[in-house]
Amino acid sequence: HAPPPEGLPQELAATLGNYTQMPDINASHPGAHFGEVFPHTPDQLREAGAGWLTKAFHKAGTLPLDNKVARIVSQRDFAGGGAALKVILTVEYETSSPELHTELFVKLPLAPDHKNRLLNLSLAQEGREIFFNRFYAKCMPFKTAKYYFGDISMTTTNWILITEKVDFADNSRRGDELGPGEVE
Image: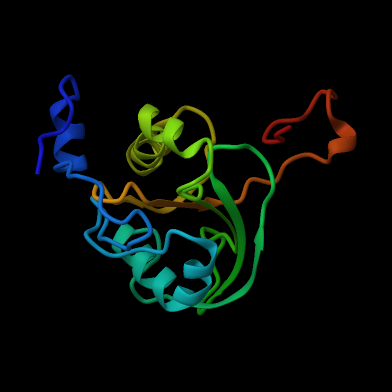
């Protein structure tokens, strides 16, 4: 194991843990935040199912322990951007609640041979985004998407981030003045 790169704040270095030589990038390894193996492809997410989501949300403290994800209603790819694979999940909870979103946005790493994967790794975007969503988003003086789960393996660089799905204004309104809480 090698120490984290120089210049990282101590808190971040402790969270990220030790860096190692990269093994099989397609392998599944425990994440640095929660110490559990997590899905890092859309197929793995589909196979992991509602049981994995329940366990992950419980670990992250975003789903009450007396509740569970009852089922995944649908999973569909989301096209847009170029820094990650994106999936929209529609879920049902055993006990619904206004604090629990049924439409979730999932970000996953690009395929190992994708032209942007190495760039993303060199910028450490994913780790920073997970860290921000987990620890800082709820402290912002404006609304952010609710964080449900995020983790990254410092061994493989695979990662996952699950938040509420933000409802964007219809494309026909592009350029219009939007009201409070509306997003273009």
